[in-house]
Each structure stands twice: as C-alpha cells, then as structure tokens.
Length: 369
Image (cartoon, rainbow, N blue to C red):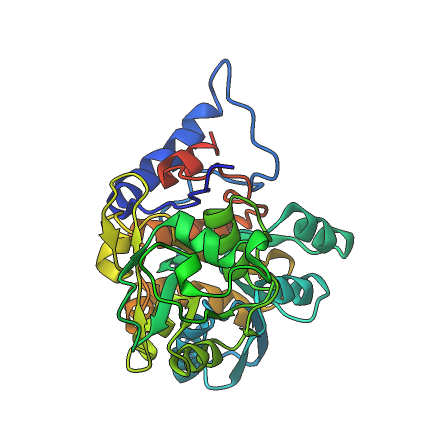
C-alpha cells in the first residue's frame, strides 16, 4: 500500500484562505445547487470570523471551578502552558491536565470524566458515536502543527537520514521478531542490534505514525523494547543503547536534545533529507511526518460552565504566543480566529476525520461549503 501522507502543512495558504473559505460558506447557502455537507461535518458552521468572536467570556478573576483535561502527551505541554497562564488571570479556577494518550483522552471525555480532550490525531467516528450515546458532542479545534520526530542514540554514526520505506522496515508488523539488527535495514549499516522505543497503541502519535509510514492505522510491530505514554522514557531508552531508535513529538525533541539526536526523513516527493524543526514544518518540506494537533471541547457544557468557555477562548487567544514557547509551530492568527468562531457557534463534529492523506488544509475547510 502506498504510504499515507496525512499532512496539512501549508501554513501560508492556511493563513490566507481560512477566512475566504468561511465566507463562501455563507454564500453557498443561497445557491441553486449547494454542495452536500460531508459525513460528520460540524453542525452550525457559518461565517465564523465575525465581529465580536473571541471576546472574553467573563471578567478577569471572577470565575471559579475545576476543568479536567486528558489525552495526548504531544498536546500536553501546550495545554499545561495555557493552564498556567489562565490560572494567573482566573486564580479561583483549577485546571488539571493529564497526559494519558489520545485514545484514553477521548474515552474520558465521552464518559463525562473530563471537559477537554487533547489529541494528536483527528477524532474517530467510533469515538464520536460513543460520545453521542452519552449525550456528549465535541467541538474540534486545531491548535498547532507538530513534526513527529524520529530520534537515534547520539553515538549512532551510521544513520543520518531514513526513508519512509526504511521506517516501515524497522517498525512495520512484518518486522516483528525478524528485523533485529541495523544491517537488515539498509546495506552498509553495521551488525548492531536494533532497540526500539515508542508510544503505545492508545497514542495518537502511534496512530499517525502507522498511517503515514505503513499506510494503515495500527500496523506496527508489537515487540518494542519499551512502549509507553511517557515521552521522557522514550528519550532515556534511546539514549541508553547505541542501537536505539524511537519517535515522539517535536517539543520533546527540543527538550531532550542533549540525550538523543534527530534523524532526517527523506521527503517522498523531492528526495531531500529534511530534519524536523519549526522551520521545515512551516515551509512544508518535512513530509510525511508533519501533522496538525487538536483539542476537543464538550459543547454541551459551554453555556453552563462559564469557566470552561473562558478557558477555551483564552487558549485560542494566547496560542500564537504559547505554542512556540513549548516547541511547536503556531497556526496563523486567522486559524485561531476560525476556532473561536467554532466555539461561538457551538459547531460540533469533525472536519479532519476523513481527510485524504496530503489534502491541503484550505481544501479541508472548503468541505464546509
């Protein structure tokens, strides 16, 4: 199967096209032959970039309560940073952020245990169905771009760049129990044992990696030396053995750069070897492991939980500054304004769930017509 490229990385196009696309939504309502809405498209979507969107939900310091967030370890640093800043403005609101994995985060929010789910992949239809069975609907909000980063031991002097095919040779399900040495990956590599570290199957990073590399969600060997939701343990594992290799989000690469080294990935379109960085994500050259990351918010609580409404607005109003501080790539301001519009309209469902690999983000938003 052809490797998937579920990447929506053209940030310049995103910044210039979100607002025109949303304006077309309103125009399409009066047309003679409007395009049908896609399955699971958000409800209530209209020209979201309207005046007044993003106004503070409450006076600073006048709210109280507890907000529970769980999910992706990749998104965790962003939500934690937002929570810390929000606490300064609303000291009587407690925000608890847990790193449990994307799949576990959706289970928690659909069970009513949390109000926000951090996700490093789009929601699945089965997860939306579970939420619906419990009377819960979610608003999908992209918050940043990430570069899923492959890392190696710092004493590894034979690998500088790997292709998608190399990654499939190392991590694919057919490799389980058979591909155990670097000389089996590529001719010229040494007879050095492979030691593998990565996230669990509950992780959105795991899901995205398997789709982008193997062409199928969940297609992954099951005999890793360590499979964990704790990204620091992945870094420590790779650091501990010369044959170590693993993968996690860009923010953790920046945090553990003294322990591990990045591996450049061969762009399938250009043949260029490209290292993960904010710059290569922003210019679109880091393919196919760049990805959007999300938060999902319970829409049914926004009208009755003013502290939750205030937190989500605060998140989007401050993401431009906070996202780069924790090591990810901020979206253009127009994208956050679009997200605020989704909150204002209580627009539930998913735009990103069934997007074909490699689809530009402007085309994704055009599905709202």
